[in-house]
Image (cartoon, rainbow, N blue to C red; front, side, top):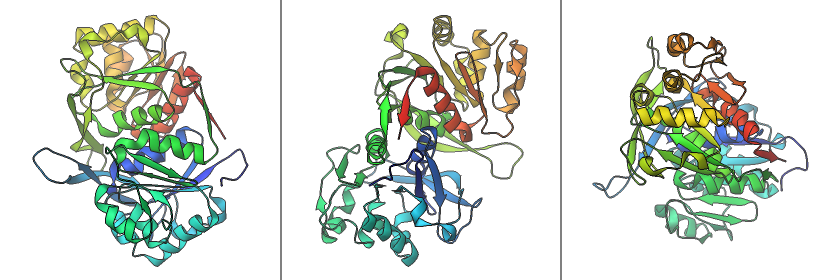
Length: 392
């Protein structure tokens, strides 16, 4: 069980080519909720990176495809881990668990969490590490469907996921099939850590577009869903169930960010029929989408309606291009991706330097951030405006 103390600290067990979302979404979501998260990888130190993998399905193939995701920067050193300092463990999926399950130091650490009955959350292929540690014997769990035979062989009570959002709980053990189930998966782990969520009866609208930044849509989207908020993503000329292509923006040694294909994002509502007045807040992801969304008259109308109603708006990276085009930054203090400074200043706002790059600012009902490393602050500041709280 989680320790009866106010502050929570969890360990995120990383490896090369872990699934991109399955590492970053819980990493930043729990930080936004006030939980300290240490991300470690055997053989690596704090400040080093793990390359990630983007896994997704296509009707043209019988299994998921893989492409290169973001570079994930570790914030702690595996060899320095002191088990007693942690209240829980998270194991992402992807391909990393295949080799982590063969690492004696990893297996030994996971076994300690299991034997102590501290909360453990594993998703997708992460359950391979649990099986190697003998942590699923006699326990109910689910996982990516292809893991069914090995988990059954390890003595688990296998729960076949009805959808790729499926999750299972057995006392301190939370398991999920894929990142599609993050909202339930993360919410269940909040409960396992002794968390209490209040004020979650909020409706939040996301303005989406093709080639919005991959993290900047899904991390806040799923983080807010995990708290119980109703969250919708809409895009001009698209309907619920349609796809927006996303972009992975990362710094890899060039003078500006690189771009790679990201996950496909499935919209949840029809743009043409949304009742804007029914939402309590607006979120605008960055990436390249804001460049063309800023030219859409209805997008501008939505932004103005939310702002004039005095409702919170959270915008990150290039999303402030839309706010500038809507003329709602006059007299405001805000930040953005540094290359968007001209838009911000010309719109009549006071520029706040994002130093460091993960710093975010709140001015009245406006929350702004410079880039996806700032998600924990962006989400937590939006939660404060909405009076959505997580207490431990």
